[in-house]
Length: 87
Image 1 (cartoon, rainbow, N blue to C red):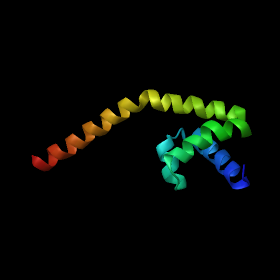
Image 2 (cartoon, rainbow, N blue to C red):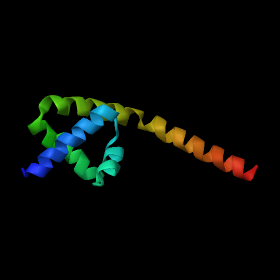
Image 3 (spheres, one colour):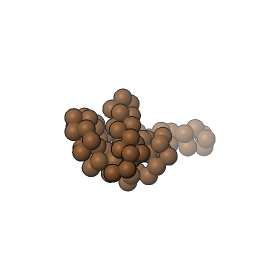
C-alpha cells in the first residue's frame, strides 16, 4: 500500500473518532468520495491499526442506527422553513 494512502486512512480514522463523524462528513472534509473513506476505514485501517479500526467501526454502526432519526429531523426542519415562507 502506498504511504499516502496509509496516512490518509489513519487521518480519517482519527477524524471520525475525534468528531464522531459520519462517512459523508469525513468525505466532504477531506475532499474524497464516500467510497474511498469507507474502504480506508473498514479495510485499510484494519491492517494498519486494528484497535482504531474497532473504534471507528463502533462509531459508524451508531451513525447507521441513528440515520433515520437525522433524516426525519432534516425533513421536519425543511417543511417548517417552507411553512414560514408561505405563511
